[in-house]
Image (cartoon, rainbow, N blue to C red; front, side):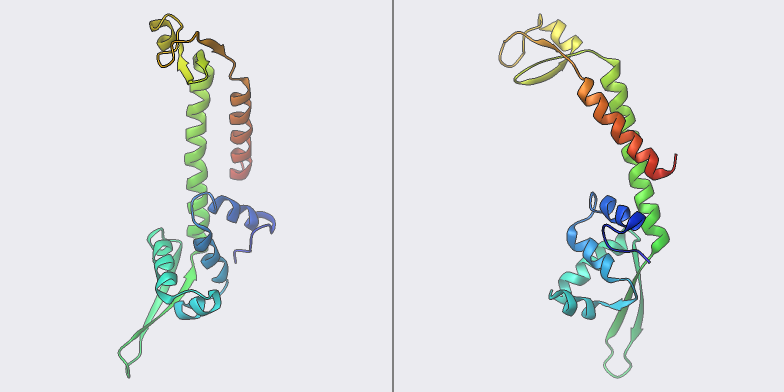
Length: 168
């Protein structure tokens, strides 16, 4: 079962989930260490049942949780028992990391593939600087060549971290 934040690899899983889900969604996932009813979760978390159901439905839409539904023959009401889909949770995280890696690789190609210039207004490409006689198109001040070594190093570090997480 998925463990709370800070506990070895599963803690890492929650750290990554926190990049794409709200704290409330993660709290729900943490509380589903065993199958639970939505009303039970709402009471435990001191939240309205409708809020908990909304969170559960959000997670269900991402295929991260599933439920069993039973009908009370006397009242006609349905009871839902929710549980985490472990394999889908790990797949969701893997897909997120692979997409992020792809974006970073593209960003790295852009950072290493072109010279940029900047002023206090921001960065522009060499072509834009050349077209404007190396003057900022916004403030008309002289553009200086921008050293992106720091950005490249940050991207390389993040790529290495993600590759490590993916086991590459």
